[in-house]
Image 1 (spheres, rainbow, N blue to C red):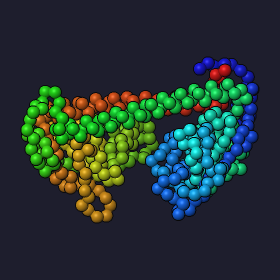
Image 2: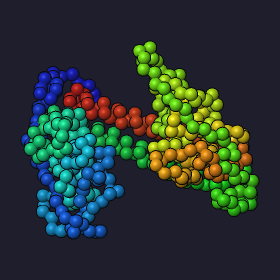
Image 3: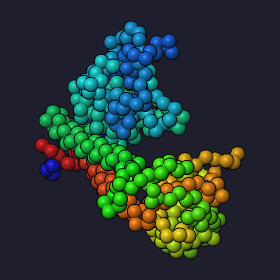
Image 4: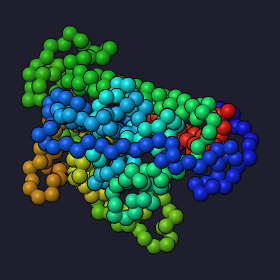
Amino acid sequence: MVEVKKAYKKTEIGIIPDDWEVKSLGNLGETLIGLTYKPENVSEFGTLVLRSSNINNGRLSYNDNVYVKMDLPERVIVKNEDILICVRNGSKQLIGKCAFIDNLVSGSAFGAFMSIFRSKYSKFIFYQFKSDIIKKQINEVMGATINQITNKNMASFKIPFPPNIKEQKAIAEVLSDVDSLIISLEKLIAKKRDIKTATMQELLTGKKRLSGFDKNKDYKKTEIGIIPDDWEVKSLGDVFNISAGGDFNKKTSNEFKTETYPYPIYSNTASNNGLYGFSNYFTNNSGSITVTARGTLGLANFRDHNFIAIGRVLILEPKILINCKFISEYINNKITFVLESTGVPQLTAPQISKYLIANPPLSEQKAIAEVLSDMDNEILKLEIRLEKTKNIKQGMMQKLLTGRTRLV
């Protein structure tokens, strides 16, 4: 990518290069409305009707498909390089989400709450649909109450437009290459997660023994299934002191507004680092587990640091020698908590204390935990790389689609 210094001009949609133009979408292509069908037209097989649920993260998805058997007008059939756009939805955030049609899905139909934008410049315009320039115009059209955009609205949207076809193609190709990298990272992460899941199923039940442990050991039938002879079955209450998080008092006076509380605060959600306040629960036990007790129920997290716990989370502190990383993985993958109380769904210390877990020799617990931690670290590195790539793409889009960075 080469930065080329050229003159710029101020326009109604921002500063763009002197040799670029401001074009309305209506001058660059056409917008087509989708298919209206009745319940009796829906069939197990037939023509796929693309809907909002078929767009996920800017790409086509086929996890929720609808097929119809009926005579279809030509205007509702998608073609290669069309742009599929959600133009009406109960959720305002979904208006404007889009995907690029390729040969694999060409010939399908699209639903009434969707539109197709068709243009010979569609590869370039597709990325403009994902930019802040069009998103801002969509929000202005919808206002506070309207959850749709019309064909007339679409035709009026303006974009920065380089007349040079080579520059259009170069911009689209660079952004497409980044998209391909993002897709490959997502697939690799999904593969690594599947491998970890399969590995856990074997390690947490003793079906697979690690190097250094007796692979020829006999097995026995227990309340939690078949496990190696040298493993035990214990209840969570046998292994942990279980208590609930304390009350939380938020400090609101001016003296605390710039203060970051020194320890992470955990509730029934993810880490709430940086809350201002204190709780009457504090642990300096660097090996324990928190289990969410309301909202998302039963999610166990190994904690290897000091922390504060507030209501709606249970704290499991070991009372025998045990590896908490191993146990947290076991809880998340082998235990399904069944609620006993009516009213607000929640878990209590007495409820979970009776649940049974496998208790291998401590050395094997540590070995299993180390293998799973290595897998977690590998996945985390890939997730960080994926997030960085997505952020880089956003920055590239801002510069390339407005001409601040030139490729030709």
